[in-house]
Length: 113
DNA sequence: AACCTGACGAAGA
DNA sequence: TTCTTCGCCAGGT
Image (cartoon, rainbow, N blue to C red; front, top):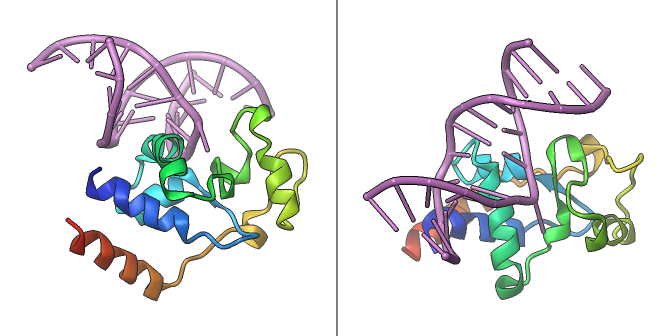
């Protein structure tokens, strides 16, 4: 597991209940802007191992992009996230990690190399 | 080592 | 608005 993946895991694990974030934004926060595809790979492969809140990660513009069978929308509705069709309003439910947390995570990544 | 595959995303047609 | 194309990069053939 490389530093990028570790970075993503720590970020995803920090998403609070009732909030969501997009694949692209996570990649950006992990210093790999444009590498959204690796976020989906990380979720598929690391979710069980690190008990990640995978359902709080949505596609661009707050749209659900996972297969219907995964029940992502239902899980989010349970946390209070509201939808219009399969879209949610990121201005209301989007997670904005604060600077302190980002610095803490970066240090964790650097430390555990 | 070469090639393929994504629970993605921005840009262009 | 919907469809293609292409960049992205870790893992698995």
